[in-house]
Image 1 (cartoon, rainbow, N blue to C red):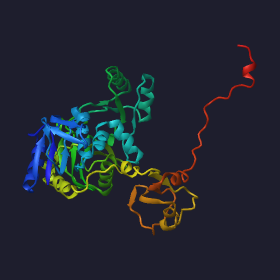
Image 2: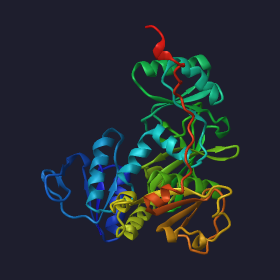
Image 3: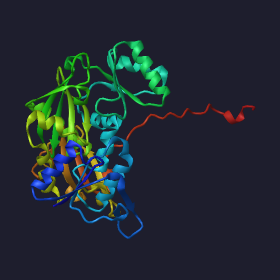
Length: 396
C-alpha cells in the first residue's frame, strides 16, 4: 500500500518507527508535514494540495496530529475521508479525544467508569462542584493538555478554589475531578489497535509527583491486563471513533477508571517497556483495513427521502419482549436492525432467531414515519404559567 504519515516531527521516535515498520513490510511511505497541505474545494470533487501541488493518490493515512494544530489537522484528515482514503483515526475521533470535557461526556454516555468529574464556570458553583466529587484533595485539569501539562493536584479546598479562580480569570476552562488516592501515583497505558490491546504498561510517578507520565519522569514496566481493563480500553477507543489509541486508566478499588483516550499515543515508552513491535502492529492493521475507508453511515443512509437511522428501545412490557427478531414485525414495516445493544454487549447484524429482551437498544434503518410511531411520546412538564383569569379587563 501507499501510506502517508501526517506528522510535523519526522525525526520523532514514533514517526521514525512507524516509517521504518512500513518500509520493512514493503510499503511505500511518506512523512508529510500536516501544515503544508491545502484543501481544494474549487473542483468537481474534493482534493488536496501539498506544497502547492496536487497530491498524488494514497491508499491510507496515519494522522499524528499535534495539540497545537488540531483544527487544521482534523480538517486535512476530514478531506482525506471525503476522498475515500482510509484512516484508522477519524477526524471526528481526534476532535473528540482532544477535548477532555467532550471525551468525558461521550464516555459517560456509554457507561465507561471514570473518576467523578464536574465542569462549572461561575465562581459560586466551584465549592459545591468540589464537594460533589468528594472534596479535597482534588485534581484540576485544563481541557486541552498533554504529557501531564495542565494537570494540578490541589490538596485543600481553599487552594483548589484559588487555582480554579485564577485559571478562570485567564479564560481557561477546567475540569474538577476526584483524586483517586488508591492509585498511589500509578496508572496504566493500554495501546489499542483495532479491537484488541496489543501492549500495556504501568507508569509509576517518582517521589512526591502524582503524575505518572514518562515526560514527568515516571518509570514504566510491562503489565498483563486483566479482562476488565482490556475491555474498558477497547470500548473507550471504539466509542471515541479511534482504531489506534492510547487509553490511560487508573486502578480503582472496583476496577479500571478511564482517565483519557489519546489519538496520537507516543510509542517510545511502551515499546521499550514491553519490547514489542507496536509500530509494526499498527502498520499491519492499516494494511488489513485499507480496503474499508471510514463511512459516515448516517449520512449515507439518509440520502433516500423518507428513510433514516434511529435507535429503538425495547421497553419493559412491550409486545416485542420475548419474541424472536424475525417475529417482531419490524421487517414487515420496512425496518432493518443493523446492531443490537444489550448493556455493554453489541450484536452486529443480529439474526432473525435472536430473542429480544427488555431494555435492548436496536440501531435501525428504515422508514422514518414507521420508526417515529414506535418511539414513545415524551411527556414534558409545561413551564408556561397560565395567565390569571380576565387579565384583559384589569386597568393598566
